[in-house]
Length: 279
Image 1 (spheres, one colour):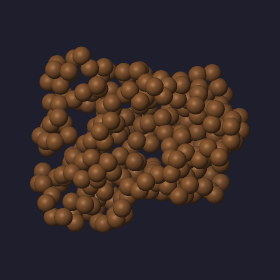
Image 2 (cartoon, rainbow, N blue to C red):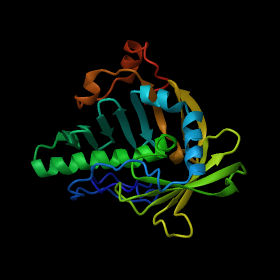
Image 3 (tube, helix red, strand yellow):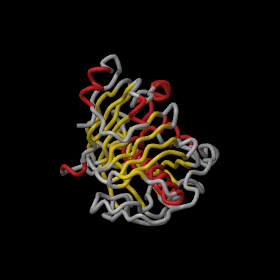
Image 4 (cartoon, rainbow, N blue to C red):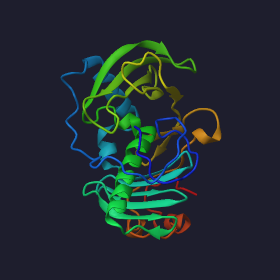
């Protein structure tokens, strides 16, 4: 999903999804978070739905996903996300900006170049950016768990092979008047043996013949009780870093602008089921 422009962060990897762009501090959608309709079961076909369910099962299943609380990842080393699924608390942090917010209330605090944003309209734009960044980055990180999100329609496309030669079933995701970029389409390749999502083809518009980009999903590892993939292809800029799953983190993570001491957290929260943490 494309996120709004927010801060002049320099040249970064594809927020469009996967074109290079610059963030600048301009107004975005006045209400980016809108209530999503339910998953479009009636408009989806049974085979595609069953395959989506098999992906979720292969990655740990619905129960383990529901029990997973806090997830951390650093989007290609550019932007850190810490998300409490249970409360909606969110920390979005890059070198030049920080947003601490709650996605349920769309309220919070934000900093630019170390200075807190207090002007009302500017703060609202920053909060909107935080939410939109989460939308974008969560698709890049958590797509196997989002195949039946609200407003999604699933269709079975064909059997095919991935760019790396894996035999796969291909299903499409389209978005029914939902999300930040509802005209997008995803084709996902589901490995016939492992049932893991193995490749993602992104179409800027559902009617496009060729995808804007195609990326593999590799190196699945267990974090807590779920599987996550961090590898999106060749090159260091296509690796998510700092993956972790936690039962709990200090409240200051979602309330304090101070730099996070991950070493201290790992020592104090050793009981948590974190498998790794950002450097």
